[in-house]
Structures are given as structure tokens and as C-alpha cells.
Length: 393
Image (cartoon, rainbow, N blue to C red):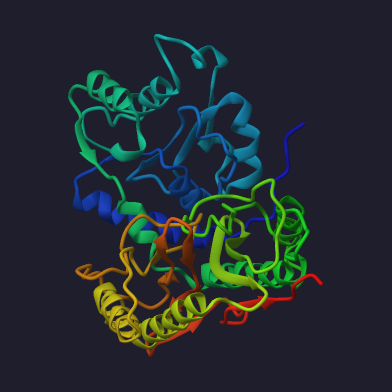
């Protein structure tokens, strides 16, 4: 028996629109066959989300064919039949003999396909940054007559401007994020194990909001006193205590579309220092949001936030945010001074005012937003404040 197609996240026309944009860039670079190896880009062009990227795989886009061909380990073929919009003949499985072999691997299967497609003597695009150097060398050695072209980040830049269908998923993901932040405010209490609080928050991220479940889990960052001076720790085996601080950064996910947000919690009355830095961050965040609109640049946003922080006597070394969408980050532009990337409608960003000041002290607050012609739409709606929680008697 054959596996049934899952309900498609996007209609076929949406994927063909994306492929048309990619093929336009291929034509500009004189590429006949593009090998997409970055799993997020494979997802963007087909709907494939199975986490099989730990072994060689590839999506081959031929410029004159409507649908691409996905080449996977044989055991992953059924996932592609189930998840993607692709016709069955556009899903190819390579044998298990290519796994764990010193002489050949899955990239040989991809190269064989490129040769059989008649593209071995033309332009072949590769995402260099997402391939092991040895794999790039293999493509060059086995396709000696091909013109190998680096296509790194090209699709990621295309992904920055979302369709309205993508924005709808971002809003659903943001609602899940809001629900999880509100749940955090209920379960972070003195005497509660961090792991138990994390379990409740993660459960909310999975259950979702408004009838829409989370479809996977993004990174989960929980930094409590005295660990608030770092940004990328998970929960510890400690318990929460009176007069401690918790920095939480989480994201709801709907079909890989991810809407992150961070908030700072204080169990008991916040210290004057914490309150002062947080107030500065709110001012910086508001200045950034007031600046965002189509036609402005990433640098404009960063400069506005920087000026607002300076008025409160606070400096920030790290950037003020980054694009988000499929997965947590799109590694393209940055909200930092000197980045002249022009903002366009339906770009989505995580505007982040995190400050990590001392080894044992940092504060964070952020919003997930959409750029519009006239300004900004904030997708996350949890209270924009320093969240004060009750102490134990």
C-alpha cells in the first residue's frame, strides 16, 4: 500500500510561486541545475519537514522542469510522499549501502541524478555553506565539465518576504508563544523546580492556542538567577527562589514557522537596577517599532533603538534583532547599525532588546513583528512589561 498525502500546508500554486522566484535567480547566474541542501530551503520549496538532514540529501531544481526532485535515504521517501506537494516520480530514494560507507554516500546519488538529467555540462548551483567541504570537492571532481556556482543564502533572502499565507502561520505561531508566556507567569514560583515549570511551558507550546497545536518545538531558553548574564541556557535542576530573576525566550511553531519572544520575570520586587535597565529596553523597543516601515533600513531601526537606550544610560553591544520565519532565524539581515537592508512589506523580525551586562546580570524583552507599508504589526501580544511574580511566605 502507498502512504496518503497529508493535508498540504500550502497550495501547489504557493510552492510553484516560490520555485519561480528561485529559477529567476538561477537564470541570472546561468545555473541549469540547483542542488538545495539546506533543510529549511528544502522545506520552503516542497513542504518537507522530516529531520533527515543529518545525512546527505538534496533537492534538485532543474530550470526547465516545473517540479524539483528530492533525493533522500530510502527510509525517508515515505515522509516526502506524505508531506510534500511533489509527484511520486519526483521523490527518489537511494540505497542503504550509501550509509556509513567510506567510498560513497548520498551525495553520489545526487550527482548521479544531475548527470542523468543532462545537466553535467552546464551550470550547477550548490549551497556551499550548507555542505561539508568534502562534498563540494566531490561535486567538482565528479562533474568536471560543470560550472559550479555558489548559491548559498540566495533562497534564504527570497524567504525574507513572506506571502500572506505564511503570515497567517506566523500569527498562529505567535498566539502559541503568547499562551506559553502566560503559562510561565502561572507556574514560575518559589520552590518549584525549573524542570517542572519548563514542562508546563513546553506542554503549552505543544498544545498550542486557539485550536491550533504547535507542530514542533523550537529552542527553549530559561536563564534564572544567578545565570541571567548568559542568553542560551536551558532550565537547570535547581528550584526557583524568592527575589530571583528569570529570563525566558521561547517560540511557538506552526509547520516550521516560528514566532519567538522573550520576557523577564521577577519573583518579588525587582531590584532598582533591573527595573531601570528594563525600562530602558522598553523605550528602545518602542523606538524601534516606531521606526519600522517599508522603505526604512535595518540600520535606521538599530539607530533609533540605540538613541533611546542612550537616553537612559544603557548601552547594547549585540544587534537589535533579526529576520524570522522557517525555524528561529533567517541568516540574512540584522537589525544593527550599518546594515542597509531595506525593509519590505511582509518581512518578519524578532526585535530583541536583550542586554547581557555582567556574568550574573542580564535583562531581555522582545516582540515578533511584521513590516507593513505604513509601519509595523506586532504579532506577539503578551504584556510588554517586567512580569512580577509573588514570593513565598
